[in-house]
Amino acid sequence: MSDNCLFCKIAKGEIPSKKVYEDEDFFAFHDINPAAPVHLLLIPKRHVVSMQDIGPQDTQWLGRMMALAPRLAHDNGCTPGPDGGFRLVVNTGVEGGQEIAHLHFHIIGGPRPWDKRAAPAA
Ligand code: AMP
Ligand code: ZN
Image (cartoon, rainbow, N blue to C red; front, side, top):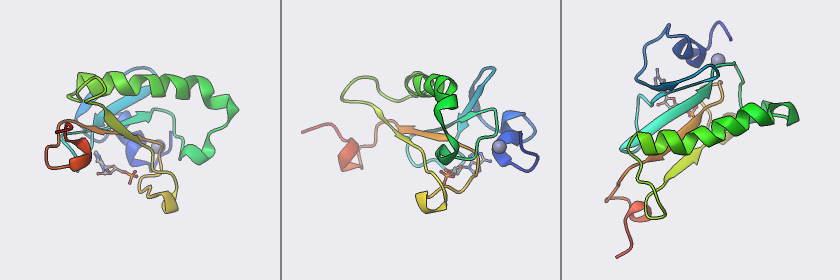
């Protein structure tokens, strides 16, 4: 845990969030500025800055975090199956577009008829 980290504070419940999931190691909540009908953030409770800090010692918990993503997506409004799906985005470092320095997976989905990439094939 890092004292000055927004996402550590959210994971500890010190800053409110719209929580959708919590277990011993992970916490998931709605993004405050959603980019799609479903926009969740999934974080490890431990303070890890980014994917640049990941090494072979992290494969077990990171694998569990990856495996959680589809479950959370489907439980929260993303359409299952090949015509549905979601985007899993992990902005990494400043040049990678990361603004919050605590590792997080964006889970982005839901029907977006206005987005040609997300519309069902005609
Ligand atoms: P990134 O640019 O990958 O670091 O994404 C950070 C994300 O955190 C953005 O999509 C923000 O909208 C989101 N965010 C920032 N503050 C909060 C907050 N207090 N609660 C929920 N989401 C937040
Ligand atoms: Zn943190």
